Image 1: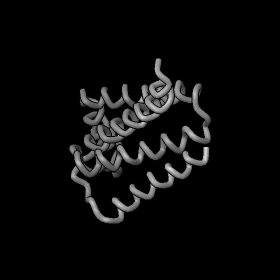
Image 2: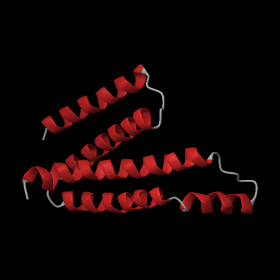
Image 3: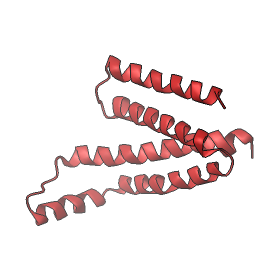
Image 4: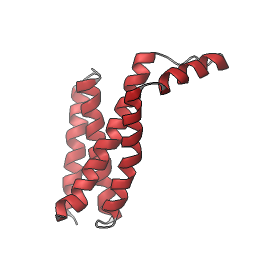
Length: 128
């Protein structure tokens, strides 16, 4: 197995899977609307509909697989370097899913923030 895949590739794949799982859950929440916390039957009905989604199963699988890949990557990379990389890529993928697939707003602050996150990772990595 190449060094890239056994370290950075596993970290990026972990971030993609975790972001995908969050995207699936948010998509289902958007589909079902707001949760009714006023009654137990309303709450149970909401989550009954929520868990009936076949697509949600893929999100659950991704949510379970993501930490597994992360744990494998930890075998080859320092925690102090690997975790910031995981967080940066997770934020990036959530940003991409949110803006381009969920239609969330794209404003200059989000763009500047994303660029600054990657710049900080560059400086962090360069120091290692």
